[in-house]
Image (cartoon, rainbow, N blue to C red; front, side, top):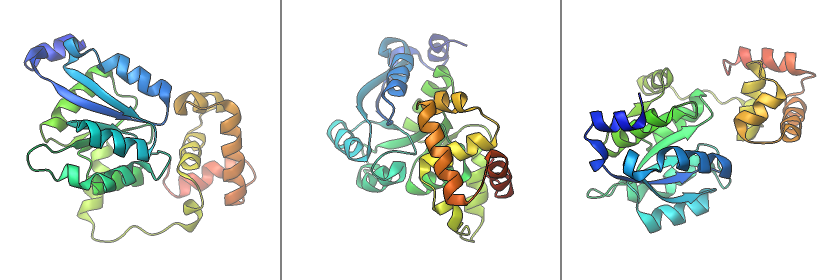
Length: 233
């Protein structure tokens, strides 16, 4: 199904939504802009971009978009910090700013964190352009949107009254190190991780070395066992 067909099935290009992209990878923002920002075809108008938390707050406040596509891991505090500082905008009864998380991570703690922070949905970066456009409009309308299987994390989290246990070892890792850890544990090669996270192979190697050092592990096989035991894979 093409983007144009999706438009035709839901009212055509008469629909309009103003969107801000928040992601610390310029190449990814450029790709999303090219995929969904053809306003006459998709109905999506990209009115601003940001690469970190402070930029995001500045752009969102200035443009007052209807939907923000928000990466989870950002310099300056991450997507949760953007949500915290945007609380008054989300609470605006007449023109609320709604957030849709768009991230490479499909980890339960990331999904739950941004939903608790006020995001209306969470989709991964494997989503197609057509489905992303559809998700943006659904969030604009107030719906909750999730990639397959991620909704289960949210249902489980909100059904439980118990606070998740703190993992001191995991807390030693940065958000980026956790992303690399999960991909290593899933069997990704360094080049594949670099492509997935839009970083260099050398940067991947540095992150792996840091993870091994912090967790006092010797190799990627031990790292995989460690991650599997904690259900991070």
